[in-house]
Length: 397
Image 1 (spheres, rainbow, N blue to C red):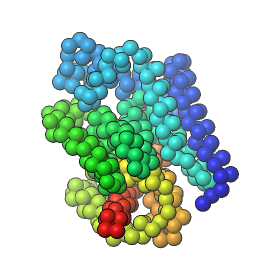
Image 2 (cartoon, helix red, strand yellow):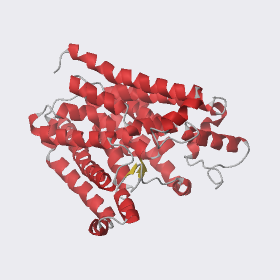
Image 3 (cartoon, rainbow, N blue to C red):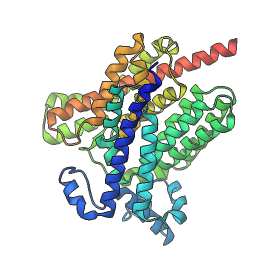
Image 4 (tube, rainbow, N blue to C red):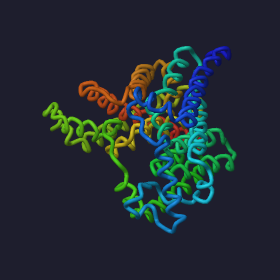
């Protein structure tokens, strides 16, 4: 275990986070600076905090008696649960709300990335300024709030021990994240596996609530998917490589293979899960902090699940940052070192790669994305099955 003196490296990502937030503040209060920044970061768009303005349009439409999700001319494409905040949200200026969300997100991110060595500190600092992080902040997207809720909820559930109230608060945070952005729902079944006793029932009940809501909201989800724009350049998922290769007429043989991307991805995730099951005993004996395991499982399942959906915006890649602390820990375990270092390297490449790449580099980056989807599934299943095995042994004892 590194000495307490090495905690000084934790200030590296904190300093970068503060610089990033101050940069956002400067662009918000001095819009004349934005064209200069946009000349370097060509993916930036106007207005600043674009996605937060979309939420505001939804709130304003609701106040006018119009359902913004049904209105095809309104770009609002979030669950109607978000509309519950309309009365308060409309009173807060968009820039203030987006900057507050950015502060919450960055605090959650640096709270997860707690480096203990110089190398970890440098990587953590780079991740805080990575393209997906800058994109989610520049857009003012609600994924930032979902990330903070998942990070805080998983941490609370891991620290709950026998305190059901604390665990319930963590499960509630995950539930709210799922009601805002849908995909965090995958964390609740994992929580039921990682928890035990009454806490497991709490996680199951939260999962039933969200599952019931999803079942009753299929029409709403269809509208959300229909109104969600597609941006394959700055994106990840099993269908993204095929889309660009087909559009640019590159590598006909690879295009033919990738047309079966659904089967290939399902098979790869299944193999990853099988390898995780077979390697569960090795991980069960490895030392790690509970919250690192909870963060890892949450980030791994969200990434693998959204990857399997076919396409997602690149700002959602921020969730694999949840996997980093546990991978750092496993990189020190002899039996898991090779897998952990390789997976961590893939995560770093995925998060740090620029959005606009030549076709060859793009294909290579997408290949890394496929591989870490399978590798993260391996780790998540290994952790979950090891935890279930430990719970079963405790019950028999």
